[in-house]
Amino acid sequence: QVQVVESGGGSVQAGGSLRLSCAASGRTVRIYSMGWYRQAPGKPRELVAQITDDGKTTYGDSVKGRFTVSRDNAKNTMYLQMMTLRPEDTAVYFCNAYLESGPFPFDYWGQGTQVTVSS
Figure (tube, rainbow, N blue to C red):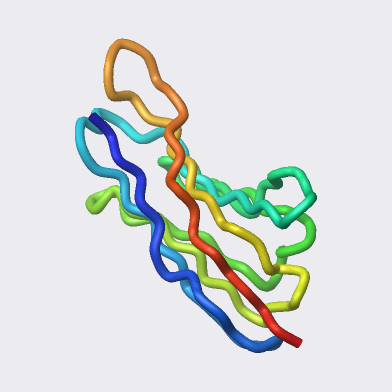
C-alpha cells in the first residue's frame, strides 16, 4: 500500500513564503516523477511544478521564478519552496507521485494542503 502525504500549508500575507513537503511511503519500488498541483475554488486543477527522478523540472507559467521544486530521492520526499506569494496562489495544493508499486506504474495523490495568501 502506498501513501502520499503533504504538509506545510498554512496562511501567509502577500509577499511571504511557505515550504510544502510531500512524502511517499509504503511499497514504492520506483518513483518516476513527483509533482505539485493546485486547485482554487471554481477553477480546474493546474500544474504548479513537477520533478523527475533525474531532477528535470517543469513549472507552471504563473509560478516561474517564484517557486522552486526539489526532491530527496533517499527519503522519497519532494519539496516546494514558495516565495513572493500572491493572493492568487491561494488554493489547495496536491502532491502527485507517479510510481511503481506493483506490475505497472500508477498515479498516486495526496489529500491536499491548504495555502491561503492574504493581501
